[in-house]
Image (cartoon, rainbow, N blue to C red; front, side, top):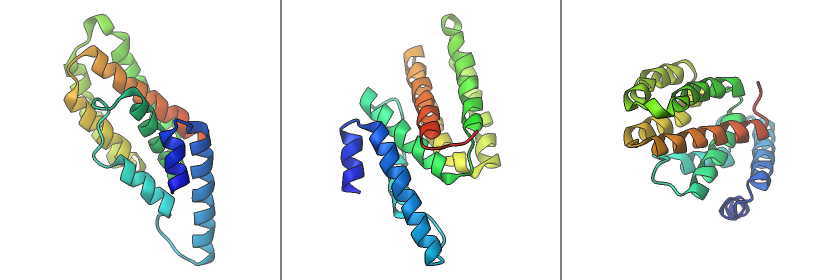
Length: 165
């Protein structure tokens, strides 16, 4: 995992995605050979990077790192389609398009929609937790934009990691 960690620290996200996707694939093959079920070591490592995260306290590089790890993790869950994440992003984009009339209440109204999404698709749970925690901290339109950029990154890295439509 040190090699994967180093790629992430160096901001080599494309190489990070390739390495993690390959590692998860190899670990899954090995688990199938041994008739094992559950998560791979690499998936567990990804989960550990996502626990109790919020977007707003992070620096820009850390936001990209988090979106990269989450995008790969969600793609490898094989239960979540890119279009499902894009539906969430579309709602955020709609709120963002009303910059001059930004109202935090519109963002708060997203929380039940996110909860419903998490209930319908368990694979979204980590993403929803991060978004829910981050929405609580929004104080300005700039804070909200940071969440939107994070979500765009998740979509991009999910797709790069082989997430399907």
